[in-house]
Image (cartoon, rainbow, N blue to C red; front, side, top):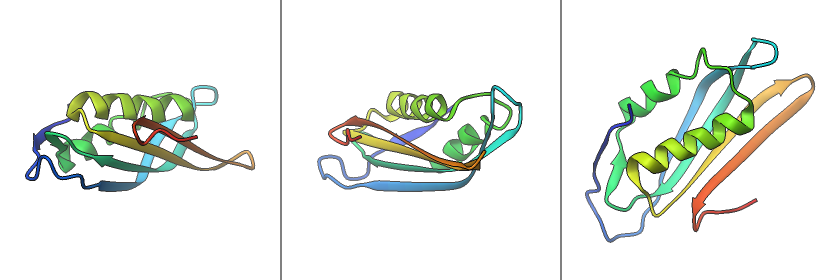
Length: 114
């Protein structure tokens, strides 16, 4: 479960960035592990994400079968639901598999980009 705490500076626009270089999930087609760096950037509103709960949340994907696109978007959805930020972007930078390097970027709020 993702935990939050009160933003110490509500009303001030500032960005928080997390980089999680040890993310793993499982390919739903082959069952083989997929490795990625998950990058999270958000502008908090009233709540901030607590780091230990984020770490445990991301570890929960280790045995989960998910396509890169699905897991990146699910992480964004879960984080937005937990802290209701002003804006947020989650980037899944997946290691090369089958000769293809995949980067998936999903955004919420003013951070929306392609």
